[in-house]
Length: 89
Image (cartoon, rainbow, N blue to C red; front, side, top):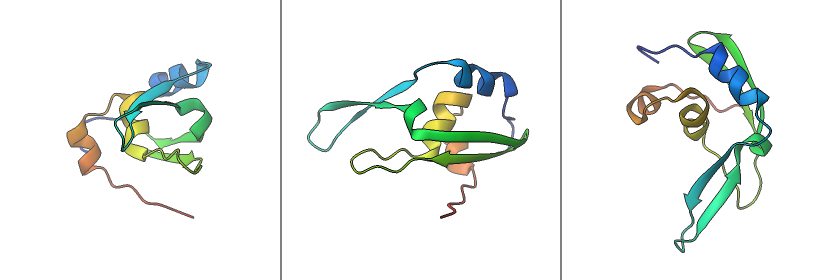
């Protein structure tokens, strides 16, 4: 990411919460709640500009790395689009 750095304080705040959920509309327009804490196995700060995020993948519950960045680190949509995200199986 260009201008912003990832904050250890924001990561610690996320880790200390018992639940963090996001809302999303499904294809039929129904509002769905997804528990972010249940879907994120780990977030590791490699340095102030790099993260390693391990996400769970369940049928019907897909979480995008950008959604994690937005919720945990308040990253803007523009910054998410500019971020380099590498998927490792």
